[in-house]
Length: 246
Image 1 (tube, rainbow, N blue to C red):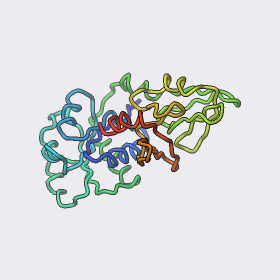
Image 2: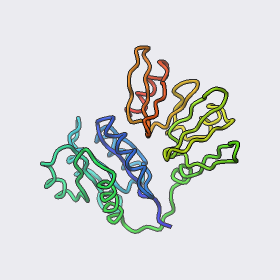
Image 3: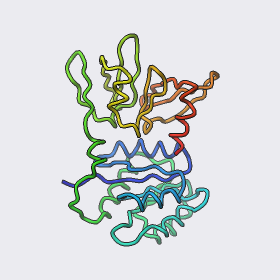
Image 4: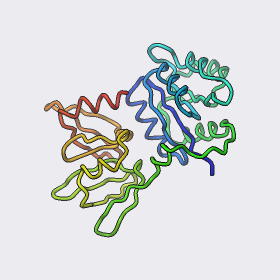
């Protein structure tokens, strides 16, 4: 069985990083193994991990995306490179460095799907099984409901909120699960690197937050797919920004 395409996102803009995450998570057999805000961190991530493709911005503080591509390892350890930028005038240099695709922002799902397929074809054949991290990420979350136990991939959960006396879990596909689980129960069962308790009554999928709107109280409103809005407490706001801006 072919393992999922392991993707690293590199962009200095927070919203661009999260848009790319959201679009990649809509693709089949794709897993995001890291998100970096600068090229130096990306090079370290490639050295430390098993990355198949890097989605790389060009204009960033410090090393540019083109400079980072030049410094990627050679041979089988070199990931495919897809540049994602607002600038069209670097395409010649990008392809001279071996890029498999060059995406212009704003990127849509169909165009990204073509880039993912090109990166997949560029990956050397391998029979290696998926890593433990990938397997764990794909393990379904068991949610007891009045209609039975729902098995939901953690990545499909956008957020969960305590409403009245029961917790409602929201899915990326619009599904809704009402459960006797507490928010704390869900927090223990969901991957800590993806989910955060943003209020005593709510937790959110960090990878699916599309916008943070500041509130006069000092907190935020987190906007998620489907235009769902979750209140972020003032005490959790700073930590949330830190984690989203990594």
